[in-house]
Amino acid sequence: MAEFEYFPEHIRKTVLEHITPDEKIEMCFIAGSSISFSKDFVIITSKRVMVVDERTMGYLGKLYVNIKENVLIEDIESIKIYKSPINRLFRQASIGLKVDRYEYLINNGSAGEINKAVKLINEIRQKLVKN
Image (cartoon, rainbow, N blue to C red; front, top):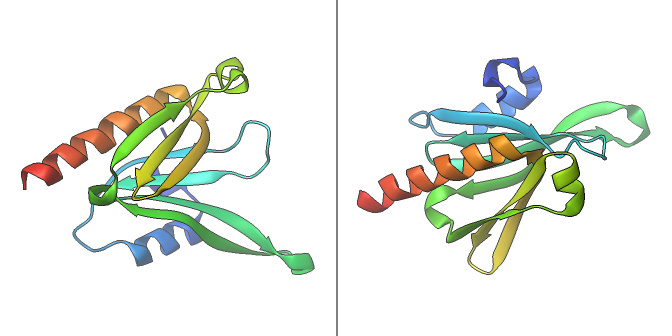
């Protein structure tokens, strides 16, 4: 599991701009890094799941932060864990977060971190349902 404080500064700044002051960062990890070279920074707060990555702007070489997913946990209808043969080989898994008619995917995370994330999201969903 990654620590939010050790994420790149521009990633932290962008995430903090998009969450509310009463949200607590519960878990962070890095996904999407098995075969591809791009990394997804996954942040789970007390209210949402965010996935951000770094992109390069054309030939200028300037980095910017792209918010790939910003899903409120209360909107998540179901969660699935996917393991392809390549995922199994690298001990990885992917999560599908179903919201309305769309499924948000978090690909190629460590299988252990994916399992912890699913457990945490389900716990937060249960708390939100009770309130």
